[in-house]
Length: 104
Image: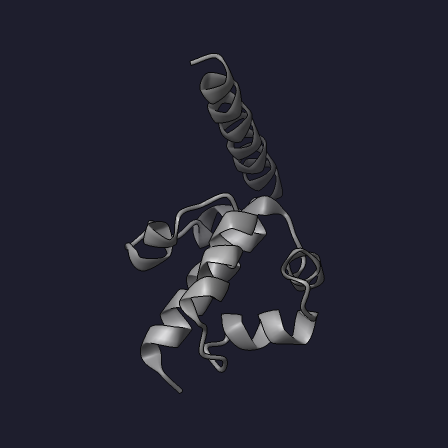
């Protein structure tokens, strides 16, 4: 298994979970199947740049974000209330960015 593909897959999973989506929900946006997303997240599926861009767009992140080191939030997922607060703040951040762009 390719370590690079596995790392990208782990980051895709990380951002999918931050969004609160299942593999099937992401697959639906990609016009694919949940099994495909599972293979991507495990690093078993090589991705074309076009597919990577589509995934990043669906997750509301840049492709660059998938290639940069991000601080893992696994620790916070252990506490349900903290995790819910993090997800709520992420949604508010996205809403703020949209409003900011609209009124800029």
